[in-house]
Length: 118
Image (tube, rainbow, N blue to C red; front, side, top):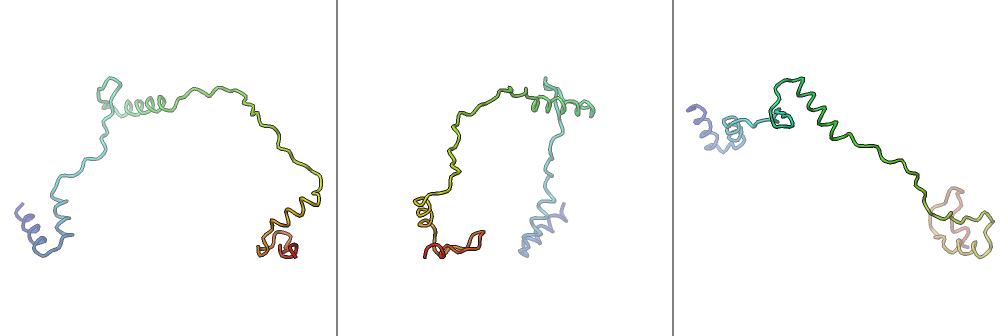
């Protein structure tokens, strides 16, 4: 321990905080990992590996075993959307032309909107 103490003091005196931190971490106790203790429903720990696997299977069976949703046919009471297949009249055509932005990029027909505005 005296060698480790001398290393710690030397690192602190020289201002090498990285080395100091590494030495402190190496000196301290290790963090415990995830506990592998698995218990029965009554609280008794399980030591047999096959029983542990069985207990995990029981646990997840209980977690994810949901009854099937009731199969009911749902009818939406939405009226059909009114769509006309008639060609547009002159008023509708003028309204659409007024809504066009003059300097927008051409559409799929490759015709610029300014062509229709003038």
